[in-house]
Image (cartoon, rainbow, N blue to C red):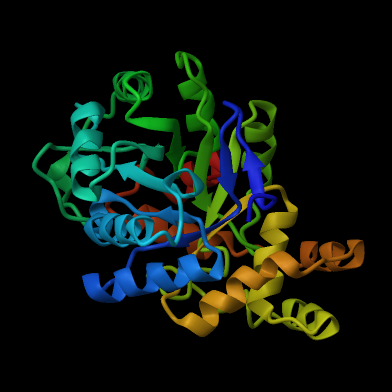
Length: 315
């Protein structure tokens, strides 16, 4: 798996296929079992977050695997995220995450959303009165302290639009290494990828198959005739085509399945090669921006209050 890594702007590397660990059921035994299976298949990048509730399972599964000699710590990449109620003290938040994981450091720490919640809000769907002003400069200063203290190897952001990235870079001493956003063949993030590329910020794609398990998700990606035709041509699956498209754009992808068959299918996307014709055909697919925009402006964890604002920002 060492060859399947992206080089970040700070010299660190990132395995280009990651395993997402969010689960609505959040069953610890199931999550731990899936992580161990993933390790045996070759996964080395594990994505978690405080708000997911999966940090205990991720930490326990990885510690046991290291103890059993299945993998070395330096070969694993662990990403976690600063929840929106912890912006006042990212250092304390990351120290709590490390305690929960049972680790001395994580590889990547991301600002989960460019929005702030009051300190006691530890649930994923806050009420209107739970929001407070987002001081991006103070938050990023705390993230930089996390890096200076050796609590993480890299820092980055998640769900930041082009405009939010440029605002952050006005004062940041450390450029984000990663911006993790939704991206797939029907939500291609052209403007964001272009601007991020100018600053060497790596795009990591969540919901790379269209997020059918999410509130805004759609199966339109893997069911699209173009994706299915390309899959048939290469004797591959539609999921593998969608994932390989993301990888072909120079991005990493975060896949989310605890099903062993699908986990194996997803990681085998690394073996697929798409030709120029395939990429041209995928570019013909209609982007479904309105559906995603309507979800975001109705999602109380989103900083966007109107579709027009989000559309101008092009997250």
